Length: 146
Image (cartoon, rainbow, N blue to C red; front, top):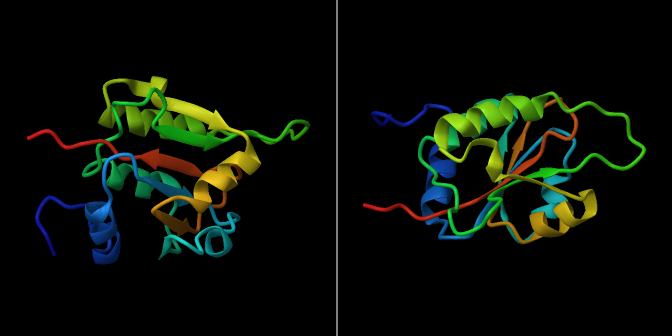
């Protein structure tokens, strides 16, 4: 155990977050996301039994969002014609606003298949048990200023 580190962050996940450099991306994926096939060239970390919000909140305690890009947080856009609701996005915006003074201005929406292409290039993908749909979120790492 470490002092001050959220206990939900496993040793494997902490190592990955530490290894990531400026502008590397990590996907926190919902339970429907094809994590293993998208993550063939990435590190896939299983976080079954956990939801995206609790993982996102814990990560943002130790992970700076990129300040050199306008939208370091990407959400998978709802497909045209799909009537799905995305109330979980409001939860994400609240969590991010507590961690980053830019608030919901850091969010961008990415078309589904473009999101998949970006996910294939991610440093890591966290496969959660999140049941909400369109609950995938991609974070771009910033720099830590001492």
